[in-house]
Image (cartoon, rainbow, N blue to C red; front, side):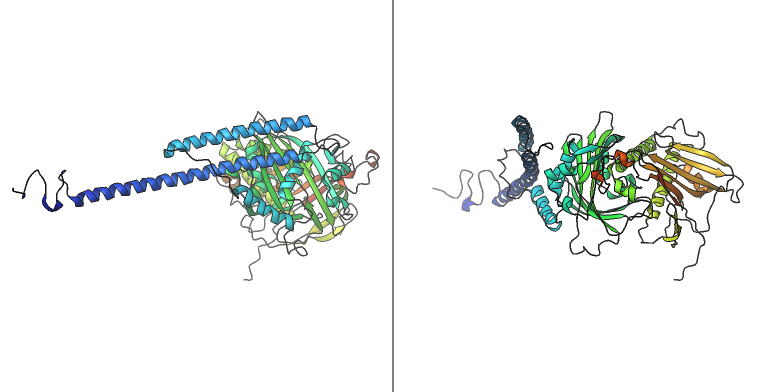
Length: 588
């Protein structure tokens, strides 16, 4: 029998029934295996990414549950200091159960989408031993509480602020005119047990105010959490501010849960009143849809207690801040609380002692009225048309109007920052009486936004014509003007002026600007490089009250006098005049 051939077989196993060579078959097998490995790796990466997202969502649920349960456990009635009746707790717990069910449903929906995407169901996520947001935030907070002494940490500060914002009598006492409220120290101490209430050298300032602001809550929150925009919102109060460190970012791209360490200097627009310089923690939390709370609390930098500031007072911000609630028309209702513990290291100037002790200088009414006015200004900045009070034809376009408003805003900011300069320049007293005082200072002009030559223009009692007018608020006193003084030696010079008025006081700032620079701004070009050296004056209430209406209060503490923020008996005027006297050559 011949075995050399037959049946299509191959000798030595070199050929197969499909006619393929083993080497070729192995190459196809390896390619197929490599493709499977790549697919599995891709699926694994997708699963890991989805797991991270689901873990974050699960973590968010756990954080919210913890926060809600803690809030329920710490609820205290401000009237009696006891927990609320059981019916309220029952409904709060039912609300918590409904929210939990909603969050679990949302988590299940996300899990189903992820399961369809990767082609198999996702197993139940194991409980996290160290949730990302909770662990990082708690570690930071424990450090701050340990180094912050008697000042509460951010979580406790937020809880305290919310109680102060939402409680009424007996925690808050309305002023004689009914416009604002001050803290009842006895009720506060019974509930919060603050060590500052027992310190005889600490003066307490605490006030609350509320009102409507022309801006939605999200826009306000974003500006509050940005130190540069914070200064833009309050140029008359915040002379400078800086974010030192973002300790915890908000969850899922939101500002809710953001905690940051900040520094700021707060001022009264007078060189006679020392600035309040402080490091503080700012925590932002969304309470519910369209409702946000922002709390500030002082933070003492370790190992820098003796020489941290040169100010003549130590001012600590006890839990303060605001509640921002959206309204249907795009506005917001803002409730503001200011709470300070102040130790004066030097006597307060006699002209300002009543203003400071009344709480008007750094109180809630001043913050809120300033916010309302500035938000009106921002609203006018975005309006493309002209107001009925605007002088038509001079400013040709909406861009020109916005450019002029930005130029005036920089002028006002420069004026406010010049009163208490950051370089530590001191004012020298030239003359003074009980009701009047003159101070002067001389400094080298190095700001690129300031003029570089002898430069001044005054009307000198000559007629003045308003050649342009921009309304920037509902009050007719809030406006920007371009003035021309007749019979002066400098015919190409104009005067840019902005006036501001609200319930906390008034401000008028002006500055000489040459005609070509004004034309640049009116045409809508960038006004950032137009040189400015502003002068002006401020008017504020003097804080003096009719003590017969004070109910016998001694005025030692803002909160002990129920008649504060009543109608003041007089005004304080600060005049600041800046002139560039010469352009001296540099010695360098």
